[in-house]
Length: 556
Image (tube, rainbow, N blue to C red; front, side, top):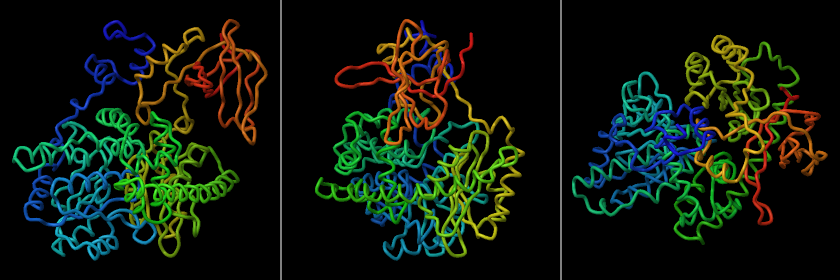
């Protein structure tokens, strides 16, 4: 492979580790291009959705985009509003209130939406795949619904005029299952343009979809879907757009986040996405939508600063709940019998329970549900580990839940608090059938053994072709044997929670940083080191630095 594609053997090995071996797949992976995107009409029911939207345009009917309050929902709503409005539709947008209306296309949300924006056609984005009762009620009100969503579809499916969801595709059809809703929104926009150009509709030929890719990259990375296939194409090209975007709202967002000039997936996932998520987590995501759609810097600046403030408030709430949960779980955790963690408490803020679930999962490596709220119904979020499908497990708990939805790795539930203990027991029974004890130990997957002399700036430049990394395409991780400390370990951070090491093989010495090491034992004597290589650009000097992942006493 290395010779055929004129790449180094280490890059070739990393590609093989990711299941990429066929010549065509290698070329497409290393050089993702928009021209490789599949025909959007291959998505289930896309043609029906396009025809209905074009009919609404011809009849001058108002279309209401009913979105969701997370980053995927906000960016997909913004993308569709921008496209439809520019191309001649009368369009409005509605985002549900997390606290008052709950997750998804609920009856309360639909009623409030129609009271504000009377319409005959509702386009539900990033929700609606399980909204059987709400969509039936909307039909009784003479309102048709198009659903554009990537979450699990209920059985029976809702009676939408078109349910555009890649989960409906047959096994023998092209798979779009990894697309999130903003990726589907981009495909819908592409399909509308194709059909509109065929019909000679005004404005369709001139309209350029590519400037929308900043939104696609932002929503796709934030939703933590697999960065393979079409998502790799959309995110690669989208990150370039996002780094140079002139969209006032995103420019302002990058300023308050103090983002670097050239963005990567980590910058988006840990700087931009949490701020854009903040308003929807605590109250209503309308500010986030207004920011993305802002037309001037004067309009965008105050919105971005307010989201930054909301994010700080969210962090305070999240830290408090996380500390409480981890303390409670640690006091009674039995690693032999506890396969799933379920914790809930009155008045825990439902806007942060998903983040708390992720933190608890990282600590204990168990599928985790965290729930909160008030009154008769508590709401919560779940996060999972490899091998345990949350959405499938929740179907087996249907009798204990008010509602549920999601996918394999993340899901949401509404439950009556008196059912919480039974829910915990049921999930643990399901997990014990699905998981083996070894599945409950996180694996450190390393791409290859390397020596320190292999590590150079030129090598890292070639290995950069693996990016963008994330879900489905993990960052590169290596290991080196028989190292020693070249200098005493230096503690860093306000609480000395980080460490800097200088590791040597006797000939070369590299700086290594261990973030969040806390009170773990430091390497000593001769040791093998697992690490991720990175470039340290400090004071105008570029050098290879190692990010420590783990260590063990040296092996021969």
